[in-house]
Length: 243
Image 1 (cartoon, one colour):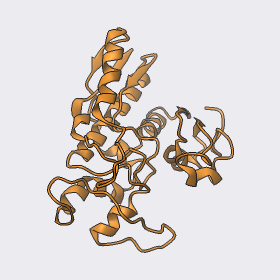
Image 2 (spheres, helix red, strand yellow):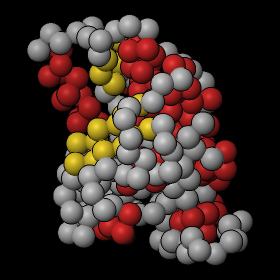
Image 3 (tube, one colour):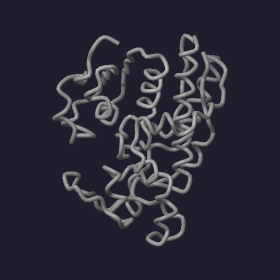
């Protein structure tokens, strides 16, 4: 089995989930490095760098405006933050409104749904390379490899097509599944095993008959992301069907 990994994840490294709040940021680089050491010590397979499939697989899942936001938010918000402080929302847009904020303080809150995914100088590069790891693993399987492991950081399953949150910026699993569907013309299944509900992945494929999404998680009424409980009637989304 191939393990796809990129050290670009180090470009997204912070210590606080929200600037000025003493909440530890849990998705730190040592998480990915610990997994890398474990798979190397277990001799599971060769560790390889991801291919670069460009932005096309990303654009097939996320909106162009959202991608542009992730690419430019850090640089554009420097007048509002001191030094290298990450760009993080302090207010959130009511998504029922039709108007998208034009000012950066408003836009930061429009494209995020919580405070756990601040945008740093290297966040886009780290998220982009993480998505390429997933796309590379999918491509390896498409070409005949029985299995491939994408060691992705930042993670992805909370990111929707136009919002980031829950430490997630680009939805890696959605990007890989959609690419496989486009490359092969076959239906694809995603099994999401995590303490938290994969709300972003479910939202992306909620009405897609060709991609089955199943999530095993704690009741969202008890823990993050609780706002999505009304869409989670079981461990499978409406897109259920034979893969």
